[in-house]
Each structure stands twice: as structure tokens, then as C-alpha cells.
Image 1 (tube, helix red, strand yellow):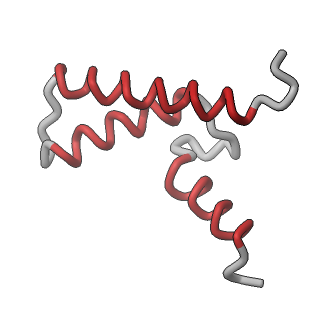
Image 2 (cartoon, rainbow, N blue to C red):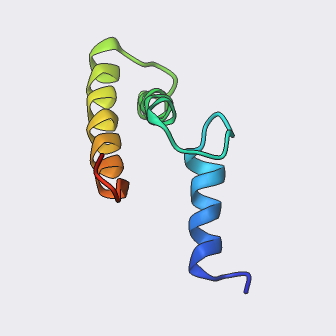
Image 3 (cartoon, rainbow, N blue to C red):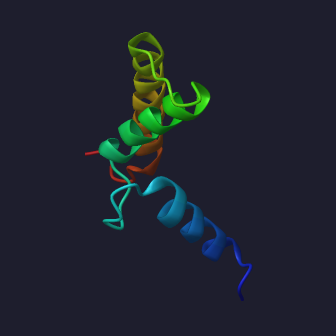
Length: 74
């Protein structure tokens, strides 16, 4: 089915979050999203203080998501 939940999640991950298109989400993808969000919010201008805030936010988000996704907790 074209609009199944799995297809929606796959689309979002592949085309919106997987910046380097390697098929996996990693911390680098989240740092790239921080830069993208900073540039978009600043309408082309990205100050270092705002970028640091976004990097911290995205790092925390990555750590939270990776902790939830780690099934074996090794």
C-alpha cells in the first residue's frame, strides 16, 4: 500500500533526515540538520551562537533517539 505507515516513515527518513544518503541515520546527519535549520531560520545567515544552540539541540535529540532504538542496551 502506497500510504502505509512503513512507507511514510521510510520516506521521511530517506529524503528528509538521511543527509548523506547512506541509508542510516547517524550523528553526522543530525549535525547537518542543525546547520540546515540554522541557515533556514536565519534566512541565509547563520551565527555561531545560534549554530551552537542547534548543534546542542540536535545532539541531545540524537542521543535520545539512539537510546530508545538501542534494543540490547550494550
